[in-house]
Image: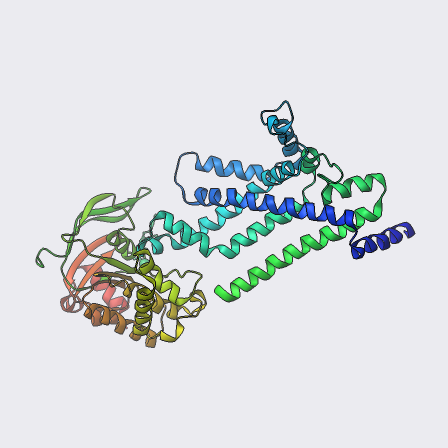
Length: 234
Length: 230
Ligand SMILES: Nc1ncnc2c1ncn2[C@@H]1O[C@H](COP(=O)(O)OP(=O)(O)OP(=O)(O)O)[C@@H](O)[C@H]1O
Ligand SMILES: [Mg+2]
């Protein structure tokens, strides 16, 4: 107990002193997860919108497949990407394994299904509500989709925030494809796992505090945005 | 030209998932103001959607002797998450109307429905009645030659209903042909020249309004008038 209190005090000191190593890990985490979120939104939102209003054979199968991908265990995704990116793998020539880019790819892969599914649900409901109205006003399909995306801008931002929250908390796949190399691919979650197993509690605790604050901050921001949008626009 | 009507339905019918939503019907619309009457679930909204081209008929066809621009006010109008003005401008924007002209026409349409002061308000935060007025302004700004209205006063209080009727009258006076569903008989009496009565997906009669209210041609319409007369 005493040891825990001491570690906590040290952790607080690390945070307040702006420890360089800590700052490096946090900023790498933020950068990588932000990149993954943007990439996953850029790919997942159009795909989700297309699944919502497209009418083509296999649509239902695709929807089920994306829903299933949401439940994919992180380490399994990590292993799959490892095989793809490792030197002997089909994408091995790119030399991405154990780089921050590999982490971005892993996080993108893990959160994209969530973004696809949430976007699809959102756009499907909006389509139900607006389809005839927009068509009556003269909007063709592409215009109508653009209108729906704009109309759903707040809900879609919240989808993005949910994706970010999940990306920054990812550990299994990130550990496997990033390799947890000090100063290169060590992000908050993987450092916490490593330092805890080494018994270096202050750093692990300091990172945990920051991670909790970040995730809670993101959720709080999402809730505030939702409330504000509902109050402002209905 | 007027004798042949501005819209003809030839054996127009609709089935959906094996259910018969509209029995095949031949109709010629010649009147400037037509009311579609019938009980809940009779098929009024369905018929309006077919006429407006939102539903594809499963048999027969619609013939527009001269193509006319159309607009529709829905039973529950959908408002975008934007200002009232932006909602009214939307249709004009799609038609490529340049922005200053767009703003001017949208503002004029809002003034005509008495919502001149509402331009900057978020449209979805308005009351149902106010949204119905925005929907009227939105369609009026497009100056349609034919306006379909689906129970435009269904959820409005008597004062707003009168106001909406006044607006519909103005739109008709500006030259638009009006086709309006309603189960408010007083309203149909005030606004319509002609009544189309529909029951369980079957168009039972198309009768001049004065005659319909005095002596409807079908038993179902007689019952409808008896039941709903206040
Ligand atoms: N896509 C559909 N599939 C099956 N049935 C439908 C479909 N759309 C409408 N219906 C049915 O068709 C009938 C006519 O519906 P419609 O909405 O046209 O009635 P309405 O006369 O407008 O009624 P209300 O006065 O309540 O608005 C209803 O029984 C409705 O449940
Ligand atoms: Mg209806």
